Image (cartoon, rainbow, N blue to C red):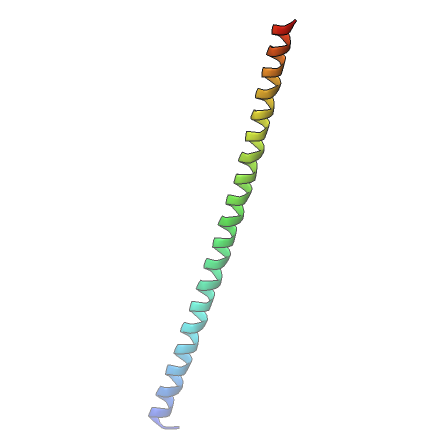
Length: 71
């Protein structure tokens, strides 16, 4: 095998390694983005549930006050 053939082979291996590294980085970034999106969705659901609970409590309080005023 000539020196040029060895150089080509080494360059090809290096390109393969770089491509694999890039693919791994993209996969990790995608996983991280999905995890962040899932966490945001969960937090949004929690906040909506909390808001609904507060609104229900407020309605109950207003109803109770109205009932007391009418009595």
